[in-house]
Length: 81
Image (tube, rainbow, N blue to C red; front, side, top):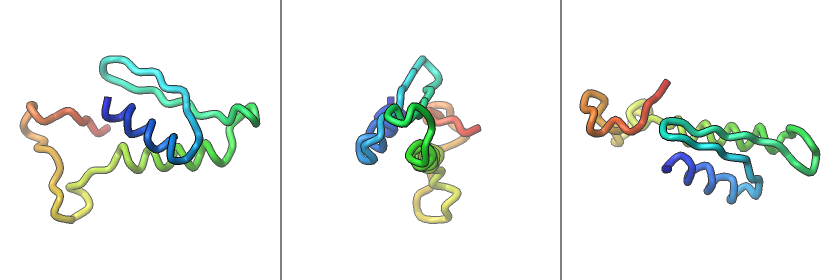
């Protein structure tokens, strides 16, 4: 749900609305500029922003934020591929 809400927030802020499909363990985001009947720069820009935010890993930034514990399954709600 957090991924869907994040994508929704980014799409609303960009005023560009993707089609979302969700299941238990995955979310599919489909981007298309309906007025252009195809993919445009808007779609690529929003896709880049979605990936940047969704795939952010605090521990890799080197800052004070360490991210969720990787060794404890109780906190493993984010899986990075």
